[in-house]
Image (cartoon, rainbow, N blue to C red; front, side):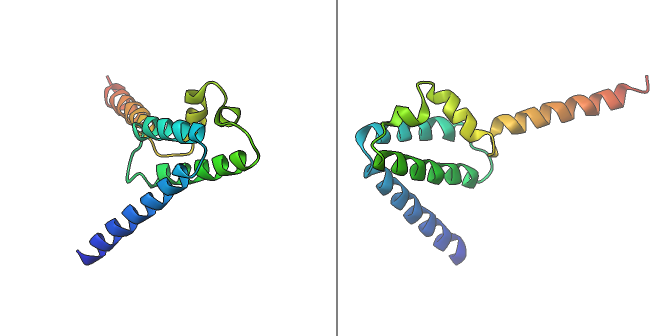
Length: 116
């Protein structure tokens, strides 16, 4: 039980530190990051650590681009949703789980009825 509490406290501290980095970015980056974050959490599956890793990478990308004088949309492009979809390709998402479940269910039913 104590380990779980320590982990939760550590996770919360880590999240606050991450968001402090976001708050240090120029305002357009803050806006875009927070909108992306909200969008992406709707797809998070499992424990969410995949999504946090994507967020950390995105912060690093935004920090580097801001340091080079680029605007947020110079990094993401005008189709921010497409940018998000690219980021989500290597994460565990509910949509991936739904796809897997659908395919598995269909194959199971076809095999079951294949002997008829």
